[in-house]
Length: 216
Length: 216
Image 1 (cartoon, each protein chain N blue to C red):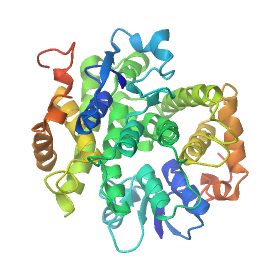
Image 2: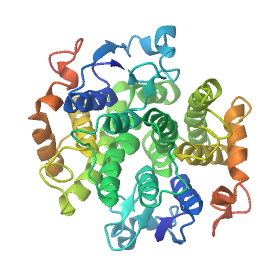
Image 3: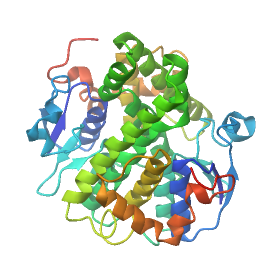
C-alpha cells in the first residue's frame, strides 16, 4: 500500500498505527505541508481536497479521511479487530474516536491557524493558545468518559487497542507538541503511555518519521 | 428511543433522518442551546460533554456523537442500509460524510463563534463570514468528488441514500442557514434537492422542529 502523509500530520499518525497493528507493509510518500506540496498537481491527482492522509490500495480510487481509512482497514483485514463486537460498544469506541477526530483535530490544523492569522491578525503564539484550548476541551471530554465508564480497561475500551486508542494516542501526541499540561487527565495519560509501549504505536509516532526534528 | 436535540443542531438533524429512514419511532427532548440548557445537570447526566445529540436506546449507556449513532442505528436496524456493501465503497461514503462531520461542522458551531468573539473580538457578522468560508471549503471538496466519480448517482453513492447523503443534507441546510451561494456546487444542490423530496429527510429538517422560526 502507498500512504501519503507528513511527519507532523496527526491524522496520518492514526493510519500508520492501524497499518502496523494489522501487520500491513506500506510505503509512505511525505507531502511537505509547510512547503505547500499538498497543493501541487501531483498530490491533487491523489486527493483533490489537498489534505492528508490518503491511501492507495490496489487499483481502485484512492482512500481519504483517516477515520474512513481505519474502518476500511478493519473491514478488509479483520485481525486484530479495531472495534469490539457489540453495537453499543462499537458506538462508544467510535464516539470516543470522534471526540478527537471531529471535535478537536479539525480545529488545530495549519489551515485554521493560517486563517486566524490572515483574517483576524492572530499571532502564532496566540494561535497556539487556541490549539491548547480546544485540545484541552477534548481531553476533558475523554477523561470524563474514560474515568467514569466501567468498560474502560487497560485501553479505552477493554484490554485491547481499538480505534479509540488510535485517536487518543494521536490526540495526546498533539497535546505534547503544543505543550498542554496533562496532569488533569490522568486516564488519558495512562492509556497513552500504555499504547506507546506497543511497537505498532511507537514506530508510527510523528517524531520517528523522516524529516521530523529530534524533539519539539 | 429518546433523542436529545435542538431545532438548529445540524448533527441532531442527521440522527433524525436516520431514525426516519429506518422507520424507528422516537421522542425528542429539546435542549435549548442559546439558553445554555446543555450545561444543566439534567443534560450533563446524559452527556457530560454538553454537546448534542445524544440518544437513549434501552437500558445501556446513552449514545453520543452523531456519526457513531448513525453507525449504531445501521448495525442494529440494517434495513434500509445506510452504507453500501463493498469496503472501498463504504470508505468513500464514510469519507464524504466526514468532510462534513469532521472538516466543516465542528468549525461553525456556537462554541467556536463564542470563542472567536470573546478572545479575538470577532463580531457576529464577521463570525458568519468564518462559517461561510469553512462551509464553502467543504462544498468545494464534496463537489470535486461527486462531480468526478462515476459512482455518484441519484444520490452521493449510487441510487439509494447513505450516510453521505445524510451528512450532505445537513451541510447544505447549514449552508442555507448561513446564506452560502450554492451556484458553484450544482451536484451538491441536486442531491440536496433529491433528498429533501423524501419525507424522512424533509420532516427531520431544522425548520420543521418545535421552536424553530418560520424561516431564517
